[in-house]
Image 1: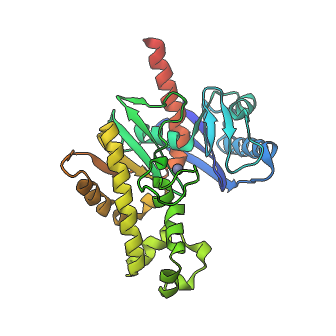
Image 2: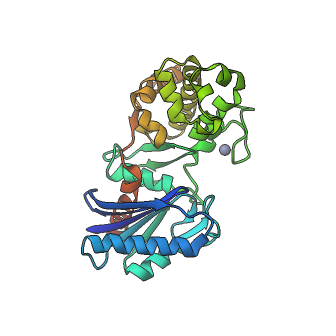
Length: 322
Ligand SMILES: [Zn+2]
């Protein structure tokens, strides 16, 4: 097992580096904003300098393994970023090779939702579960699944795009081009858009009329609901209903022990989970099953970068022994 793991998280708004160990302890972390328009050269420079400063801080010459999670489409076998919605010029960027050449350790790359699913299996609620589904509720919605103890990748490595399951026929147009995807309705972006589109309700609301439309986000909607805002309550009730529809669709397909939910919206805690559990039970209708709806691990992103090499190396070890 790798002892010291250097973990990189390349997101749309920030990049971060952590140093962690095989028990999931984060020893150090550093973040900086993503420079979106300067492309691969600047990204590589930032990653290398942040990695070196983290190793220097702990007096390490090199890490035992490196985990990289990337918000975009990746080819994990070839260690390549295929496309990035956030950073310019990253088409076919061999990110693993750049890091491997510099730090002299094996690099494991995954997209962020897949890595978060692995993190739940290694450190989180999915630790002792062979069958679970992970769903991240954030600006967008993504996910992953463990089936019979193995991460399910699909024929093209694209399994787990649960945000693009249609839950509202003829609903709002999604970024993927379809209508009424779970992501278009119940993601952070979807929730904010549903609020902003209801111009009359926003105007009449004491709370919303005081903030700029661009400042409306899921966090505010939960906050305003707590303050007794009826419109926010309605938006959240609707969101929870569509989430329950999506989750029961997922449960019907996978029959998991649990659906684990992470991402920014999950930090609403009981305000989300309590009514969601009730809504899922109701949505089962006559097909009740004892599936748990659980909250994902806290610092999921940091732990994802660490969990990735641990999972892949134990997997490779198992394959070599068989
Ligand atoms: Zn979609």
